Image (tube, rainbow, N blue to C red):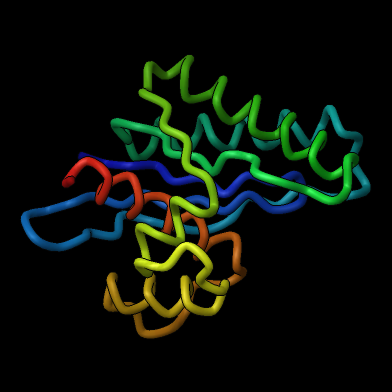
Length: 157
């Protein structure tokens, strides 16, 4: 199973494509989609949508796993991230992908075994689980990888 993991945002969308092969994870690709604050919201959302469609077409994932919005202190931020999530999910649905959503608590639990793990704990575990030489940067990318791994681990239960 090939999983496209997404950490949604408007300025930065972290993504990863991870595959489970026997008892190990196979990293297909990971990175970030960035949009400029100079552009309108509509243009930024279209850039995110177009890039997600490109990634789906290039890497042919079976499922799109995305972080659920859990809690934001800033209503403006939560609205913008919700809109980005919407175009990302739409791109997945149009491609015929199954969509799975995970809360930050579920992701932390699946990666570290502890629901209150820190960002640093997640980054270290992602690096260890995938035998990477260094921690994926920015945080959004490490989070996207963690989301892919969470989905794979959830299926293994």
